[in-house]
Image (cartoon, rainbow, N blue to C red; front, top):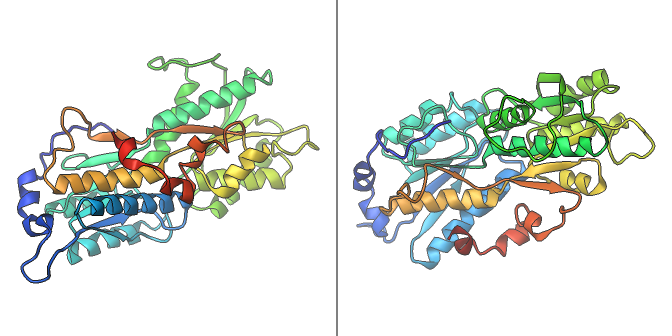
Length: 368
């Protein structure tokens, strides 16, 4: 998704004109009023979203030390596949009144209309995690470089297989869900790595000749749905497949369940026929599986930083700062990090998902 720093849909003047009492921190009748920021994740259950919540609350706490009161309203659909509920939440928050919205859209096209409605009501929006089909008026897009994450996953898969002498691997790409911009970018990055015509970025190591066994199956939004999809797929190709890429936590966990149930997990020494699995994102069970050798690796994000940066950017904008100056871009990446058995317990890994390690981070220093 291309972006421009020009805010043509809504001007800064319109935003600030609607906010003088709140930004100043005083009301005529009720005393000091906090800036009310609603953070709307795709879902509420995955550890990824919980880390974003903690990062958003940390940003509010840091602003409080400087005398700016910020209230984080955490409001999202229970399930990541409930698009109508996410739309309803956006519309409800527009109606009840908030100073700003941070949202991870479930669908790049369907969520565009409600986000536009928010902007038309002078409510600035920061988009996180997954992009929208339009850019006009967006304050900032804070996300992982998902294409690069998929590219890194493919590069690690190629190196791992080359280490076993497999130079013409047979691979499966298990997709996540139609319309999820973030995972679609990961999937495309993984595919493009193995495309010899893609020469715009360097590859580190030999480029294998890949036979794609499957690239058109979707895991869906839950671990259970991923298991239902991956089960027949693995059964069909268990004697051929060398590796599988699953582009998010639930798809990776569901695929892992299938590999274990069929005795094809990498940590099973009793079975000579084993399939490599590389995932995306982190959860305690998935990281444990990496430590045990059942999963070769996972590209993890920094959701704590994502939540922190999104709220920080939005509050700075509300206070009148230019958050898309010549020094910054409309898109801001929070980084991608390859976790393997060799570094799964390292401090740089742990700080991206562990609650206690996140609390110890000096976020203001990291933002410099």
